[in-house]
Image (cartoon, rainbow, N blue to C red; front, side):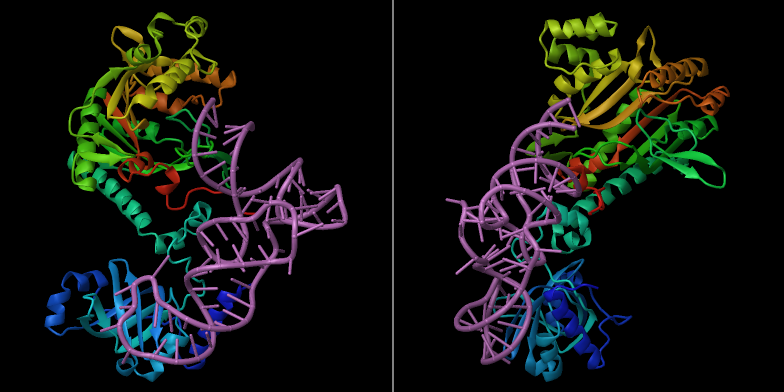
Length: 489
RNA sequence: GGGCUGGUAGCUCAGUGGUAGAGCAGGGGCCUUUUAAGCCCAGGGUCGUGGGUUCGAGUCCCACCCGGCCCA
């Protein structure tokens, strides 16, 4: 171990403790209360003269004045002041506290509770022991650890010193547990399907590839769970869901991490309108659970999940915001002509569907602050969704938006195996033509559909994006404990 | 991928081509009501990496590495 000066000093203190016969990393501790529990009933406990044993990390500077010292220790539930008098604690441990213990060390203290003359709840330490010596020093005590790269590379340190980071991950856990309870109560069965897949599907994205040595077979990390969950609907489960990690081999930015968490659920004998109601109910429930209200504050905006969400046809929204009525231009050339005629600043895309998506992303998405369902997408963008009756160029699909961010995607599932095969063939054509995000032919999935899948509504919700919204975090790396970073060196 | 921007002590940051700095933290000393404790003293550096220009580079130039913001 190569140590800097501060680490070397701490190591010397550790060795001094060992020389005195003290184990700096003892196997057991004996706390009687969490700090939070003590603070909750501090005056009652003082009145009853209760003695407690507390454990925690020494935070901030120790304030040592000859024969009296102060410090704070922190556990997950809270932080409390230590009153350390040489007379109460004894010369030996008072000296150790002064000379061998440091900020960030984890200690155990025992004694009665009292308030100091400023009224601060304190434990008057009569016994002290060390539970773990910290060899690394803390960051600066006022500014703390603020460098983003340092925070992410040493997330454990970020969590020690930045309480709001812990709060974000508590919010995330609450979102997931609320979602699970919501779906369980509605009769959905939680399932687990393969992460290693021989054919990747269910979304338009590039996969990570790996290899099974024994089977001499390439496998893909899943980009979605969709096709497996629908196989289960064929199998007769009428409501299934899975919450798990998907992997997409694409860039990293403030909305994307190569691995991210999705909830997908499928309900037999339901359609995309049912899934809209499910999203509305789910979001209300999460908002109340997480924020205590259907109204939440995000980046200075108030977002209200109370009312039903507007359902806005995609084509209409694009026409309203850009002036281009995509239903009038059925091929890329005429659509592009309409775009250039209006001198719109939009990137040229290789297909009609992608051009429509580009129009949407540029002109509509940035305006979607309040919860909104965009409905009825072009079939070209939706190879797994059922066509609209009487309007076969569009499908029964919606995407859920809030704060200009896509939260979810849902459709009435395509259950016609003949149409599905045609759609896959179109995708394969695109893939061969160079679209590396086009979907793959999945013969086994067609085979499953050939046994008959009931009319089904399906929905996917990105947990990371949802957490960004409810924790009011503008960057996905703030809602992922260990986001992807390049290796150093 | 493009533009802008950053990387200097453990941390937060200054540093305008001429002897590497401050605050906090840490070390030594004094101190029994502190909470950004206080006072005195001394220490701490591969200036992201590698080249180049220059009498002289943390500073200017080039390349690369690792971040951030914006755009695609």
